[in-house]
Length: 258
Length: 291
Image 1 (tube, rainbow over the protein chains, first blue to last red):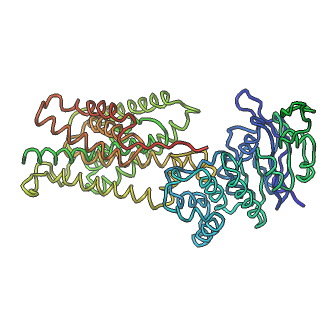
Image 2: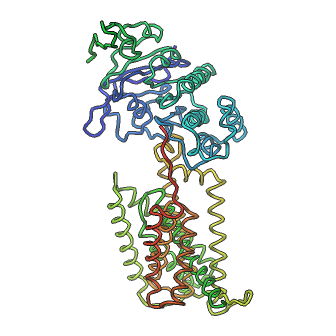
Image 3: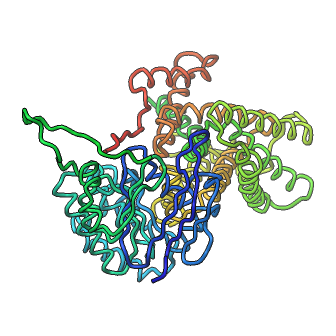
């Protein structure tokens, strides 16, 4: 097994805020790796650091993709190496049509016929998009925009797909649908690094998982093991471990990770 | 009635050059988020270069104009690359000051090199000849201006609609970070936006040049184009064109029926009225971000 993405001990600062405090992880080829954590833990920052979206960061550490050092590289070049990212909150191009959005996803490619095939493939994943090809993406519903954002990221034929909270603001039904597709994309050969708040769904779909708190990883392991972990159950899945006498839900953290 | 139609025709003709200036400003405003006050001078210098090519070196007009347009693209790219891009994490005020500074530098350069006296560009089509269309006179130069403006606008429309680079330009304007995630070289795209914008402005300048060339020749079209762009919402290309034509027509009607002295001021009255009625401008669009 070879690691497709290898992050070694990176530290990221937002001006004076010390956001990522020495984080290492490796994503094996062909797997889904999930990063779980609370709001403000630094999940999105890790993805932004990997994509080179934060200028002059990471402050320390190394990021290797497929054997190439990519820390400090321009985003445009990183994308050309075969990483694609679905940003948090979808961020589709609102005043471009669905088709134009997909075309922008394939911006780095020149093979027109293959691009057309991939458009068909995206429509096969998300049939609802094919009815709206010529509509502005700004007029799609939230769920459709998320589908478009995932489809757009696939258009560059990435080897590694970074997904930032694909379940954000979607109904449970849609979340299920999106996660099914994520599993399917992975089975068709795309390695995935997934950042999520929805711990149950993320652990269900992923092979490995890491838990991030305050800019550090506090736990990592196989997803099926983490699912059985009592702390994870209590903190991230809201399983009640103590019943109160009056029947109120009562929360008690057993462990503080810092 | 003929008078009215005649004034509207003249308004449309002069509105064409406003529209081109407005288009240039909107292009840059959308990609760099700055009202670009150097727009006029980005056109001024190439116009003088064209004049120099004809007057000093004796080349024919079409060569000079092609040279001027090429020079304009380079000038626009150069200004973005050498000056605007160097400002790290700039705010709007800072950028405005930068554009005003560049404007003064270029204006000074032109005044120093070519002098402030008024001349006209030697040009085969004169503003004194006119053709009669359905009982209305329209000068051949106005007709040419209108035609060129419409052709250029159509070209821009097709460019933004159907070419990959045009769509990438729109994508960069809408969301620069995500455009970079798509692998679009956004810095290059922004630079080319300045180049294209300078070229569009230069077309307006070259069409004014047969009437008058002097260092302040672009001020009036710049301000009226800006006014038109604001009326249209500052972020919409069709809006800028539409706004500029409105400004041109109203200005001419005002000049004809009310007061010729206050003709130039009326554009700003139009801005005030439009901003009272629809503060975001006539063509601006808004999205509610879905979460």
